[in-house]
Length: 149
Image 1 (tube, rainbow, N blue to C red):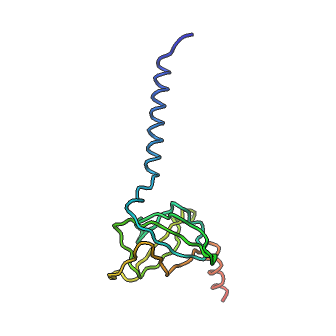
Image 2: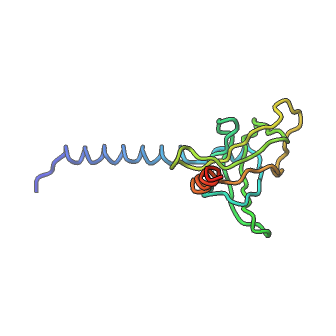
Image 3: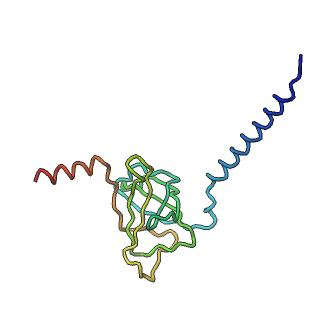
């Protein structure tokens, strides 16, 4: 049997490159914010597919990650999310479920109502002002209802 060193060398190089891609994938998808973040929550009637790992954005900039989605005793969807510790969320803020495009991922969008506020939410606080998720079907039915009036 004839040994082919070139095939062995190419196989080894391929294995090394595949290992590098795997390590990069693991590094990019690891939540490094666990040590430097604080937890907030909000209750929604409908979250429309928000999942653990979705972004939390403030004025369009990522400031955190969704860490838990579950039903509470009142059958409301309770969403807990981590906010980076260097970001302060004003107490007067509204949170809503938004889309990245028509078929894009869902994310939580926080909008401060009073940008000059000196009061900020503490860890384990709950944002009370929420805007529930509206699907495309809900929006189309509103348009049709308004057009028929």
